[in-house]
Image 1 (cartoon, rainbow, N blue to C red):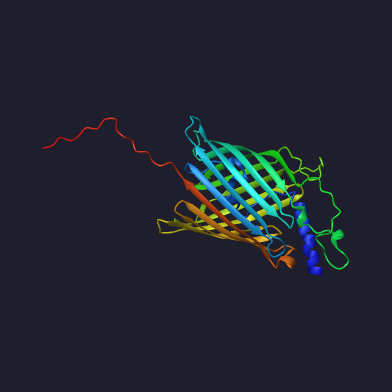
Image 2: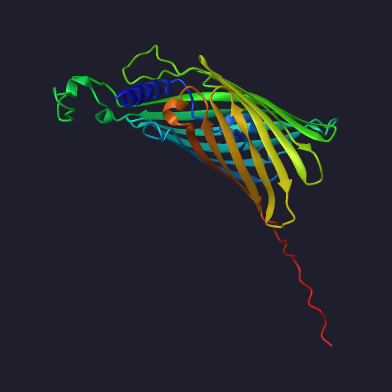
Length: 336
């Protein structure tokens, strides 16, 4: 009975706090457009696709499921000092017993400036605009008024009046990044500010319920130890309202003597006072596939038994096919 009560309180807590925190991924480096709009188009090819799927809290309550897919392109054909990036993002999330659902579509645009007097430096700025839709299923909630004295009876009226089960709003974000190669080591630092307009979100027509703006900072490097071994340290810090999240860690990259399987990655991050994240990834041709698992180390581990979230990420980068020029005139060879 005590365990059931704890699970109920935990589920209610998550349902409430889900209004104050965005969806997020442990493998933030494989979800760049959700991390910072300034990363749109920042890669060495023409097109890029990401897909991320995350499931968590399966051991405690109804599992939370998050899926994200993004497509972005590097637009280098414009005559400017640098290049543009454009992309689109689709996010969907379902949380808790009441199927609190989030659907989001974002359009992102970035400009990457490369000064002519310093080829090691790239400064980027980006913005995105998003349409957000939320819904909830009240029929899946349990209320004290539905207890008939002996047991729960779903046919009894709840006595509650819910004016809305669906809402939508628009919001926007902006971000900045700096990429610099210092002594042959590439560094990247970025900041992003999400929900600039602090949109109102409430199923009860409460105008004072705002979505807190979110600030995040990220820092990474690529340090070569040998010709085939590198260390990729990363740091991610997020702040939204009163919530703080700090992820510190990185991956060890080992290049392989294979045309198809190019590299493998092993490592993880520590989400401060919350979870240890183990991660394995590999590069296969133009794909990168990453699998991570969050091991819960917070006070919630009493209920979760340490089990947190499984996350799978896929990235695919590709370019325009090389066009073959057809000659305007064709001279036949002389016959002998």
